Image (cartoon, rainbow, N blue to C red; front, side):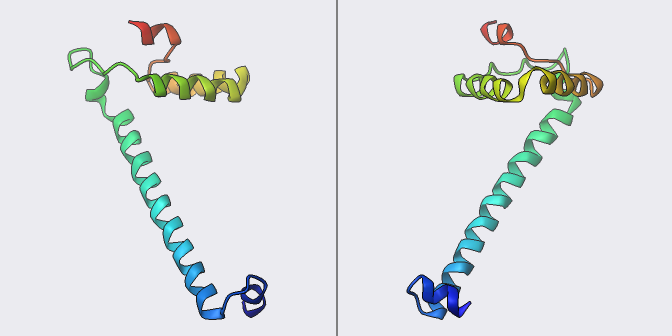
Length: 102
């Protein structure tokens, strides 16, 4: 640790404090991401969200559509088929770009 601090031109105590601060920031970010993933997972698992008699789901925003299309382009057709198969197996509808215009 002392060598790493010296390489950065910092006293050991400052270097350690910076490491702790960085670890704390990372922990907070990961906790927030975990919370968001849990909320999204809960929304997908809530059968009321998919009910035909329930309120219609809000239309996706432009950023959601753009993100989805970028992810699809990165994933490629083989991975998309596998993911879509899993979604169907779980009882979820497959989103298509034409649905965003409805």
